[in-house]
Image (cartoon, rainbow, N blue to C red; front, side):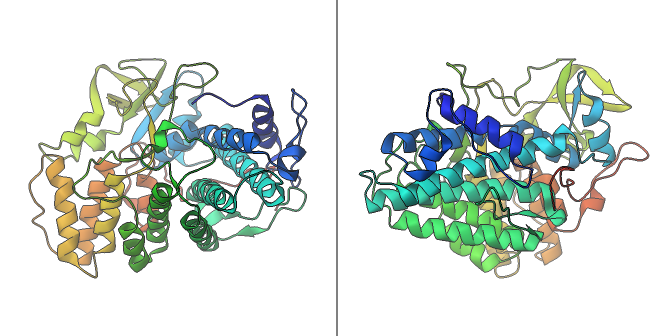
Amino acid sequence: MKIINKLYILIITISILNVTSCTLEGGESLNGASTTSISDDISRGELAQAVAGVLSDMRLRLNTQIDVQSILGREYYFFTNSDPRFEGDVVTGNLDNNTFYTTSPWNSRYATVKDINLALTGLDNTTSDLSAQEIAATKGVLNTLKAHELLMISNNQGENGMRIDVSDPDNLGTFVSYEQALTAISDLLSSAATDLALGGSTFPFSLTSGFNGFDTPAGFLKFNNALSARVEAYRGNYTNVLTHLSASFMDMQDDFKTGVYHTYSLSGADQANPLFIALNQTANVRVAHSSYITDALVGDSRVDKVVLRDEPREASNLVGTHDVWIYKSNVDFVPIIRNEELILLYAEANITVNPTESVTAINIIRNAAGLADYSGLLTSQALEDEILFQRRYSLFGESHRWVDMRRFNRLSELPNDRVGDNVPSAVPIPANENQ
């Protein structure tokens, strides 16, 4: 996806700079347009640019958030000669509330939310030739993406809470609890689903190739339901999980990789995948936590997500023998949500109501990885253990492990390799955020 024009580049920059203060300022673009022209009366052409801008924004500092959550989940370590805080602060759990790994994900996600809010206000005020169906479909897309970005913030902040209402830059809403945030995100997805259902058959804009198969209102609604299933699992509402999965793109016979993705390219002003690192590097390297290899079952093909290094990489008394090898080029797409996760959510949602069906889903995951059928107990605890184990290997490096262990109150089971290392339950709120 090519990066958007100067107007939206400026919006992104201003949003990142100002989102954590009690007021959020607009700004003039380099080509004469203003953010006010977007919010006052968005045109059809501006709408297409705005959606492209939002999709581009969603990738900003995504790598920092994934790295921090993967380190906290003891999936891998990130060694870099330029900044030892990844093997220092993040591994010890002594997180600074005024440094990049705290502020960058927060600022970037809220910058995306701000751009979405500008476009939504513009839709409310538009005098363009957009039809009622086109406006509904667009609101459905924008609010689904907004819910995703808010969920990303919530995943980081956990019990520390966050702001949901940031629609008025001069009067930001109060902080809400983790539970309140998930409820608000669920409600936003529900509202977006209603709009998508009223949105006709086409969008008045293009999405990236990462949305192939989901680039109509009906297709995007399946993506919306997939995200809702994830949120409801986090809330522990498993009846709702099953309802949303039935309306999503989950298919236990389909490719596990089917889903929605962030896209990357080397064309124009676009960006390469920042999570890609070639094998056997020494300056910057992501190395799997040793337990990922030692805990794996014999014959599990998912261990191929890591590759034995020519020489171990050591930093600060932490050692890695295997490179993370999820992304094999700098233009590989990064998943937002995909079928394999949905099947695992289905297994989780059935633990209590239908344990036999839970095992059916588990076996689909196991068999695809080259493993025999599950032969353990059908108790809730045994199935929880098994599903968390399968999620660990199926979703490795996709920043789920820390969130999973937290929501099941099992953070204490994550390994610490040095005396003094610790796994915190949340990332601190940035120091300059006015509460």
